[in-house]
Amino acid sequence: MPSADKKTRGFVPLSAEAALRALALPKDTASCMPLQGITYPERSYPMFDLLIKNGLTVIPAGPRLLSIAVRNGKIAGLLDTESEVPAKEVLDFTGKIIFPGLIDSHAHVTYCADFSSGSHTAASGGVTTLVEMPQSGHLPSVFDQDTLSGRIASIQECSVVDCALYGGVRAGQLEHMEELVKGGVAAFKVFLSDAGDYGSFDDASLLRLMQASRRYNCLVAAHAESQPICAMETQDMIAAQKGAEGNSKSRPVISEVLAATRLCTLALHEHARVSICHISSRQVTRIIQEFRRKGLQVYAETCPHYLLLSHDDVARHGAWAKCAPPLRSQNTVDGLWESVASGEIDMVGSDHATYSDAQKSAGSFWSAPGGFPGLDLILPGLYSEGVCQRGLPLSLLAQITASNPARIFGLDYCKGSIEIGKDADFAVLDPSIRWEFHASGTFYDTKSTHYPYEGKTFQGKVTNTFVRGRQIWQDGKILAGRHGKYIPARH
Figure 1 (spheres, rainbow, N blue to C red):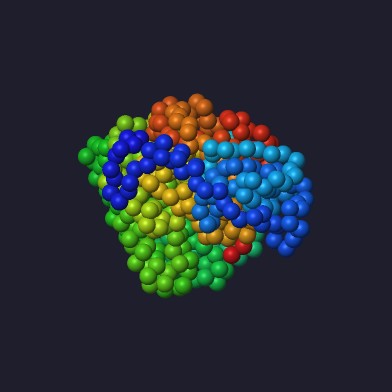
Figure 2 (cartoon, rainbow, N blue to C red):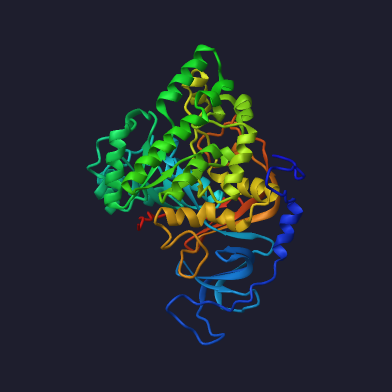
């Protein structure tokens, strides 16, 4: 990680000590705000199930020192820290920061594992809701109501955190979109580059998809890279006998720019809503900004690895740091942080995928599967690098990891913020803990020591995670079993 005194374009570094001093903010002077629709006589409160006291709580109005009352899995009151109310359980989080439970906008936990290990990983990182992609290596991909029902059953059988789901759609095969929308899928995932049996969308099929998405009022999320450019550049790298060092050139930023422009142009024409997944460069967010000014509802997602790693990590770790789009230069990383700080990035999703050493090393760099874990590092990574090193406001961190994805995916009726009536989902971070990441200490189904985060140091660690008022993670231990449920979208 960069040193604490590093100067980065547009940011003022914040030391760990300064981050801790932020906990000394004045106490919130608001009185208890009871559950909506119910009033209580002054200083007369019902018995709450849980009272969380004295944490620096990131609410929509900003960080406040306050206490949270929980009843029936919902946030029932926000109180000043001097308030005395009856509760069955009282937890004191003095010195800790309480974020709304994270919503991972881009999860692949069933691609290489199952909801059990994947949701345990989520809990350990303060992620309380997964928005799971339709592809799976263990379960049928979500293309219709039957496969949606199967995925929901798997959530209920295995997951410790809540889950929303993407639906899958292939070019020219749109007949199941309506039933999936009625089933509550949060969005549809499509590929503008080749994706095996998913195929890719040409202009005509993409236009048809935009028309259907407008008709059903649903969001389309796209992997936006130009297949012809990526194929040509990759072949050039192979012909030049390049390995990992040719990764970034094999899938250049221009391929993202062209694909994003194509998607946004067709979406604007049809007044559709779209999201561009795992953006690796500010060049793409600038394109998005242009289309926003034209009136398009378009959202921008990036991933922790595009903010915490660079193409130097690919040189060091080879196929274990391979992903698509690839990791970029440090200058590109710094530019992407500027996109985060300026509000051009709406959400940060993990794109979490675990592959074994055997899978990563079976052939050449070019034949190795792309992707690596990071689900548990969204909050520690963004806090460590974003808040402590680059001065990112805590409120903005909560927006890009919770409130924005909740709104974009139609989950904000119950998720995404610490407000009266919302689900009591919390991620509790201790900013004083400085720790070193090792895969051996995770719930990953593969414990490779070659992952690009191996041995990296982070400032701030998730110590407690709550889903609907139940503590599921505490100081390195999972406390709950099959607590998770399916959260249907409401668009």
